[in-house]
Length: 79
Image 1 (cartoon, rainbow, N blue to C red):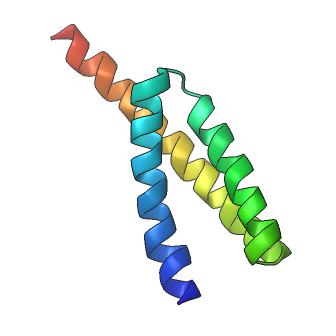
Image 2 (image 1 turned 120 degrees about the vertical axis):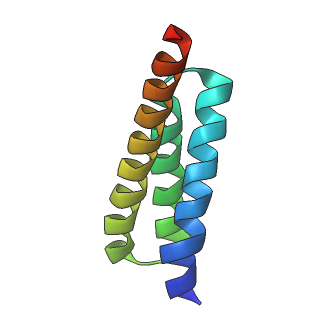
């Protein structure tokens, strides 16, 4: 069950939260920072310290998603 959670459910949740977080706040740093903090607490409560690698990976995924949203917004606003 942890395998499914870590490799499928959490990344899908990160993509959705990054999209909605950027749409609501219009700031590129808010959602990745929140994801880092929330998943750090999840690591401390439910997993062990080795989950921190996934916390970093989810934060990077959130930064990539937010950057893509910014690029799409700039691209479509020019047309």
